[in-house]
Length: 215
Image (tube, rainbow, N blue to C red; front, top):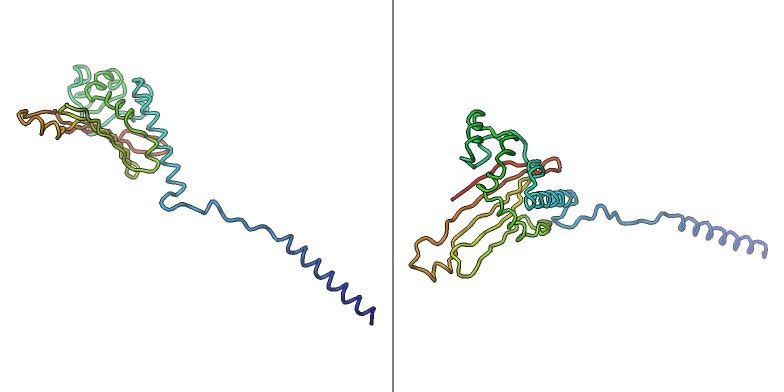
């Protein structure tokens, strides 16, 4: 009787130890962190937006330094006549443009760069990047700033807008309504205009698409 009781107890102990070992050997189940994505913030889109910001900062730095080599790296030449909106650059440029049926070569752009820089108010791109924080584009598709100065009829507007794979960089001037109300006798208080440079983001690079002027 005692022998049978001892055998039963021994069987229970061995079975318990075997079960404990199995439980300890079970792999730890961890949540798939890679699969956890915040709403409206997919990993791919975040990575692409960060790359766009890097390209914008590179462009901003080149504009500030008037670094022709880096600036021209954002353009694929020759440029079609329909992609740009600047005319009467200089006699040599205009003559070559006519011979090329409107196409603009890299040599033409390089030789007349300073004139193009001035005629398209590219210096305003410096002010644009000084007033806009490109890092804000991580969470926004559009950032803008209105630079209003008290007692001035004009104010400057600066905008960067990303839509799909296109990056629109625009700057210009508009009439200050507060100034107009204070000076009803003045007919024209501002020479309003707007310029927009559109780039496309493709193959991890920002490339020029078109340039437009209004006003």
